[in-house]
Image (cartoon, rainbow, N blue to C red):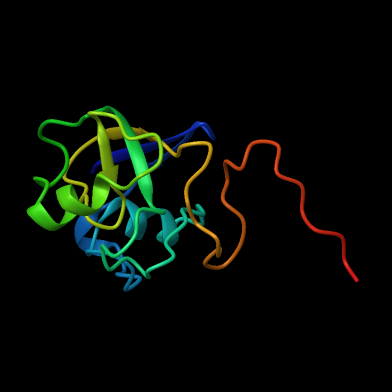
Length: 130
């Protein structure tokens, strides 16, 4: 059973890939799918269709063999991500195949949040209620 550790939260999730219910955002068992299944907010403005970069994550461990291979669509789209590194992946496309550790960057280019606030918005302050 793979273990996925989400930074900066420091939360580790262990799960059975074959029993993970698909949340219909991104590829089944993708980083985004795992996050949604376990209540971790990872931005995904395009619904996990590889049409934006809001689910951009930075792999800290397990990049070689513990994720699916990056396809051309992801590589092309990923170039638009804020804070791109050589270990960047799109959470909707990177399918978990083993233990990984990844970080959700401090910011992205998203102007709309899909279902709530990101877990890593830095010093963002919510708008006052009217």
